[in-house]
Length: 481
Image (cartoon, rainbow, N blue to C red; front, side, top):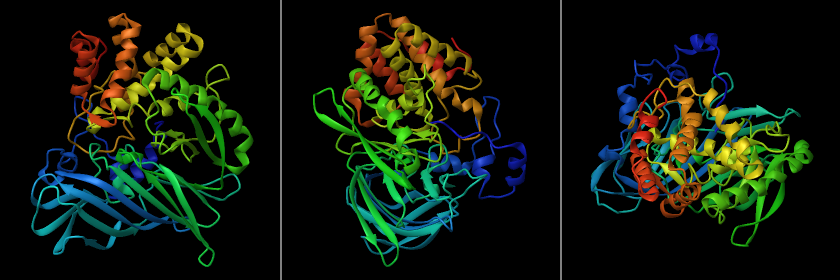
């Protein structure tokens, strides 16, 4: 992901007084450089809380978008199964979003809200493994600061609505009821978007159908994500899109299609720009194994922000520039690499997010090496060195839920995470073993959630040597080794 620019000091001061915006602007830090986490943030992110002891079978997200009002209305159906018998279950929904009503498949239930926390309470214990449907009818105007937020309400160059969602670093609960914990991936997700008829919807997963209602001048577009998906990847985009295809043959010889949804007036430049996508896919399939989501497809979508790794529906901005020899866009390589690192192999907690960003950043260097050779690789590594703060560890505080948009040093998870893998490769001094290890981790442990400790254990096992001193220093110390 490429994060938005920091807010100006005047904007921060102006908005500090509002409880709705405090998640975006309040970031006091302790002596270690980490945020001073509140009790609510610790409670919300506590992965061992027994009220979080459930498995999510499916999300059914039905959402209607009102561009003129910058408002959402919809229903989220959460299908879940308790892991232990209990009567109370904890979910998340930002307090600005209103709940109109709810229902459950098991009678005699109530809900209680404490800030952004949403408790579902039954009169008696629900047995373990009993499947429950919790359906919430909700709506409201998601938080926005200086035009940035989980919903980006923009206009394209023809002054038409252009809308995208982005929730990594903010929280998916700002736009939908869910479990905001990274480790709570649903087995599948259905996304149904209703919007003005003129707008084309693009989201994650297989496109099932588009139904038009001429009387109401709306269209409902349905997508199915048939794989587990980490919660901040669930997304949608609306705009005056056109679609074109880039053909590709995968590493097993199967014909595939890479879909591109772009604004109509950018079709020509985008068509040329995405000629690089099949080559990038080939490089990463050779490095990490088969693209994990072929049943749901591979889609690039022109979005209102710079880039985001939304699983099978990758968001890319509208600049269409090349940043390497006027031939390649390393942001595109970064976001595609996330389909393996971040989406297939996902951190179990937000403290493990370096696995997403560090590995995707390092993948940029590997891609350039595959195209131009070692000199280009080394050049990308040097850029990582000069972009590293070395002021807080990249393995963050675990078991908390917090906003990370405004703390620059948090971004060491990108370049310092990439430098860690470069250092490991140097010390291993066996490129074949090193690259085979990365592919084995993908093939043996995806799609699943993995902790930093498990990641180090697997690297040590597959590399047949204990590299923990090097890896733990990179993860847990401020300064480089």
